[in-house]
Amino acid sequence: MSSFVHLVSSLLSSSSSTTLLRNPNPNSSNTTTNRTAIRCKIREIFMPALSSTMTEGKIVSWVKSEGDRLSKGESVVVVESDKADMDVETFYDGYLAAIMVEEGGVAAVGSAIALLAESEEEIALARSKASSSSSSSSSSNVADSEPKPVEKPLEVAATVKSQSPVAAVAVASSTHPASEGGKRIVASPYAKKLAKELKVDLRLVVGTGPLGRIVAKDVEIAPAPAAPAPAPAAVASKPASVSSSPKLGSVVPFTTMQGAVSKNMVESLKVPTFRVGYTITTNALDELYKKIKSKGVTMTALLAKATALALVKHPVVNSSCRDGNSFTNNSSINIAVAVATDGGLITPVLQDADKADIYSLSRKWKELVRKARAKQLQPHEYNSGTFTLSNLGMFGVDRFDAILPHGTGAIMAVGASQPTVVASKDGRIGLRNQLQVNVTADHRVIYGADLASFLQTLAQIIEDPKDLTF
Image (cartoon, rainbow, N blue to C red; front, side):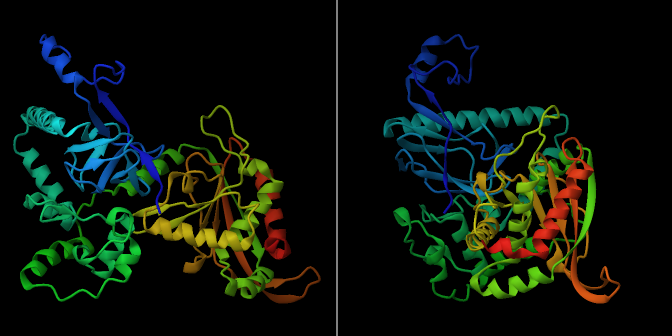
């Protein structure tokens, strides 16, 4: 279950602070009209900042419809940030008077996405305000596009084509895409994702969540979908085929997550880094894994635990430099692990990995992966890492270098453990399972000797893993 984030609002009333007051026409000389307007308790609901890197958000779904009564703390809208989909709740009681950004729409952080009226009588005024705001915005866009009157419509058309089938229906029809006969279908983001994968029609599902909301288990137990009617199937299948099989040579804009990854990678390349590699024998770790795998233990959790125990002895490798003038000796050892998703790359965090036992760490990791792929991670579950692991061993990759994530001190790239012919100190030849690890570190904080000592300790822990199960 995703946690909730409060909506930021601005109260338009005579008792409001002047810093919260938004007067759309500050130069107007009609002071009487202005005083009347600001006495109405209409609040602008802003696009919230759900992470430190978020600059804009996408409306996944409106949980409430225009005219619905809202209570403080109630979920109103689901917003897609650069990392996850999150339920957002209201700070105030009132009525959802006007939705200014529809589902599928994108808004900058801090811009208005809806209006909240305190009473039913003020709904009409709020909708009028929303219409006038929309009209002024449209006029501004027209003025900006005057030098290029032909290019603007083409740009809009291209945007519509790149939208999902649901968004395309929203443009073509006056009926809201998530509604049926005026009644909105309310479902969690994971339930919607699951319904899409299982081809379940949410209109036929009865929700058992709060206030009748459809949750994942409702979709799982829903009856198998019936064969669709010929005409609707033809309409729905065409956009789906375009999104699943993009035309070669086409230009595809970044998703929100891909845009965030791109920005962070560019920032990371500004940091002076260096790399150190090490070969570790894994026979003992492989044997331990075979013994405890049936208890739900994952290899990722074992590697994270071993790394955390090594960082306890080498805290400088767990430090980070963010401003270029100082560095932080992090008090917690939080291991972030890179996970590939359909929309990009994210790093769920195993917090206090040095203190958790291997079994609870494995359970936590499975939960984080599930939430990451359902885009349900909360900010503290992906932005609190102090050291990062990137493992491509499951693909047979023997070695690679990883780019240092912005704001952290080091990242370790882990390759596959492979049988290797090696010579022992006494001259004997034997077969050992060995893996290659390469650490990329911020040279402003961490030096070569620091990494060498850390990797020696890590190798000792992995080659004699008795401490991993305590």
